[in-house]
Length: 222
Image (cartoon, rainbow, N blue to C red; front, side, top):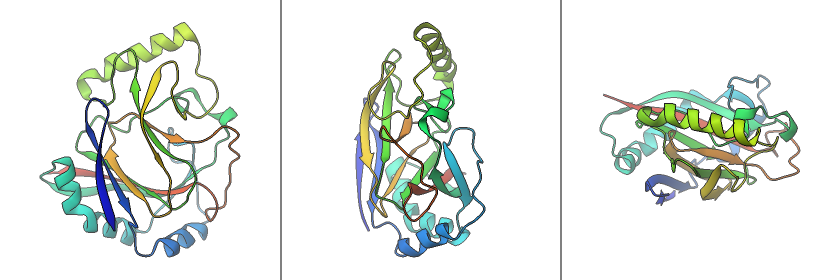
């Protein structure tokens, strides 16, 4: 396991990048491939999910706990709130409006996203909202941000039916990470981010060849 920390954007938000994150990554992908219970469980995620094995979620968080605390300045126990195999399966033309812009998971600065790539296609990018300069969402700016974006959309029209994969009229990409098999990104869910999906994307439902990730969320609780 090799790791580094990047500091992204004007806010210098830490993004932890870990290579060779899980010793049994091929077996984990095969477990995902054998599942037959994928379903749409999130309004925001453009695809299907199935619960990851608890032993994986517990193991990855336990192995990284000290690194997570030191990188993100956390001084509390880490509780897992969700861990799921995730497949991007929605064609661009079927994306609903809020899937066409960068999003954030929560305003809780103690909530981390662990994004584990079990594929080598696509990636993840982080964004800055141009007019407000916001890169990180907090409770005190959330209402202003939503109000501003809604006004901009009313003025300029709905974002086109495609995945965000670079600069747009409303958002500037400030960092981008390519997928690599068994690479893990860890970041605060309050950062504006989006999947990297290139133009011409054709959904692939086979976990062995698709954009397969394990998305695990943890929160530091005192």
